Image (cartoon, rainbow, N blue to C red; front, side, top):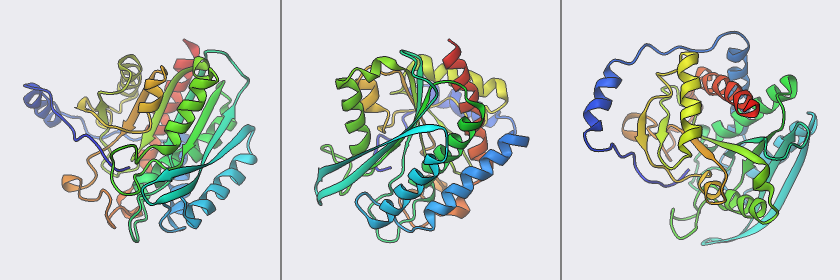
Length: 303
């Protein structure tokens, strides 16, 4: 994830937010099956990181793509791979989006959970959190959905979220912009009730942004579920505006939400550096997000 618009506290809310943070309860973490699910997401992330740097168009990302597709093929989902060539400032790059469709078709009642699986184009950058965690969580979620069969749920793995040179002039979100355009053109967007995008959700000190570009009703639904589950220390009402893979779908008319922690390390010092490594992640963060996502998916599908 390259970008973005920095967190912006809104007027006098800065003081109120600081007071609320000081009164935050001690973190609560999932136990039992969700703790195990978090460990599974961590294991998938570890497998991806072991492939090395994985920028769009690289052989390592191609290897990760094959690993994801082979694993999904063993589950009860329909797997679609969209391979395309994207013109970028560093030349034409082969990219691949992956969509796993679980459950029977249901017009207007599908939930999409998405995230990117590429890493930033930096020498030696492993992207454990930024690119690794979203892909690892989606893999663990795929295995969970295969077991519980909640209804029509699609998982979208985006290629080319990261910029090749600089986050400007369309040099970013190649995969999500392509898929949103395709789904708008063939009216697939009418079948989608909600899209939830995940990005940088493995941080050991996870504190998600109350993201202002997101659909407000969907955001409030998810934050209310998180509060009821006891995860307010992670799902804080910390406002900010982030450009990410949810934006193309918002523009296509899909109610969309971005789950992201854009405060990674002291002063965001781990972001896009060699410090973005596995030792900065925690399986309990994955477990928390997975628990909230499962309850939110069921709630949205039941509406």
